[in-house]
Amino acid sequence: MKRNIILHPDPRLKKVAEPVEDISDALRTLADDMLETMYDAPGIGLAAPQVGVLQRVVVADCIKDPDDTPRPLVMFNPEVISSSDETRVYEEGCLSIPEQFADVTRPSEVEVRWMDRDGVEQTEVFTDLWATCVQHEIDHLDGKLFIDYLKPLKRQIITRKMVKLKRELARP
Ligand code: NI
Image 1 (cartoon, helix red, strand yellow):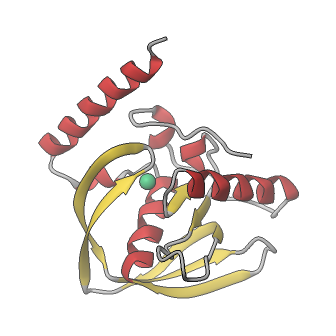
Image 2 (tube, helix red, strand yellow):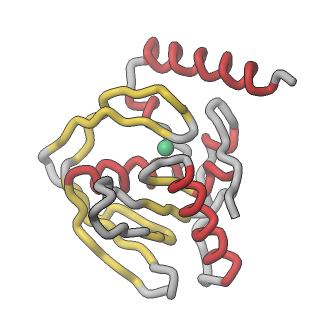
């Protein structure tokens, strides 16, 4: 079932999400709903706080070529355990900040540990777009948005545009 994506600014997007305990069917349903919501948007990543659930759950699929096999990744309690000194700049966007994009510099490679949908611990080194995406999504679990990396003025401009957009959307 598709869920509603919360738009910035919203206090729920600024909160630190709680770790997941046991992987229950409810959590697996949440992850499935998040994947459906992400693909429908369409986007390459989504974190649970963006659908109003303050738990440490992330989904992602950075396979963009429709001829390639999709890789719907579900991560519970993901954490970056090491990052490269080398960085990469990518023009990021966010489903909670539609139509706003800005360059963000992040480590180009990260090793991430998480629990999969069966509760099994996984670790993997992510590179390129996957590295950017996974770091962006894990940031959401700590109440951090990509615009928090920008200069205050740029961040204010984007936030003002979003306030205006939300006002328009709320109009009957
Ligand atoms: Ni985002």
